Length: 248
Ligand code: SF4
Ligand code: SF4
Figure (cartoon, rainbow, N blue to C red):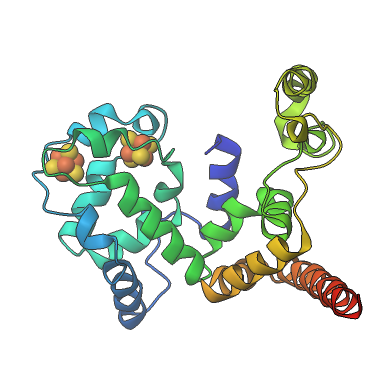
């Protein structure tokens, strides 16, 4: 996470250390139950020696006020207030590289636990999650509506104003490099990979059934509405296509 992202979160939540958590005990318990109840939790947390090996090998810990050891200890000791505080900023510093998981003598995965905490933050509509995800609304729009993340033409100064002038260093060689890839569908610099209607409609069912759309509605209602419109339109197109096949 960039420093600007960190300060954006800070604007939303104030000082997580000095401010009392603006939530009741029952809500803290509910948040922890959601984390603990996740299928991955018992697999990712087997105990903790508090040895700090994870933090010593963590690249994010070198740059941010962040320690995977601290996060694991909060979970292991069921420190509900501390867990809530960590969810306001610290969990978003993790780069999800999983170096920690490869080194922990207990076989824990601090990065995996942080992912569960992030998903729980989204589920609970925490402002930290909204602030972190807001700059990625274009990516989410593309990913959820087509199944693809970015088309190369989206990586431009207009689309990523927050990258500043450095975007041009990525922009130019990417178009060239892409043309060097043997697969013709990857040559395009105008559109993302083609996704047919049937695949799109199946994808929308997956988003609905797995709760992805519910999460999106919690953190960004406007984007949710836009994506619902796109889904309706594509589903109509697919039904029309099916009717045409029946007529033939
Ligand atoms: S999570 Fe593992 S590596 Fe990190 S402090 Fe605990 S026991 Fe040590
Ligand atoms: S997954 Fe996160 S906590 Fe683990 S080493 Fe990478 S950045 Fe650090």
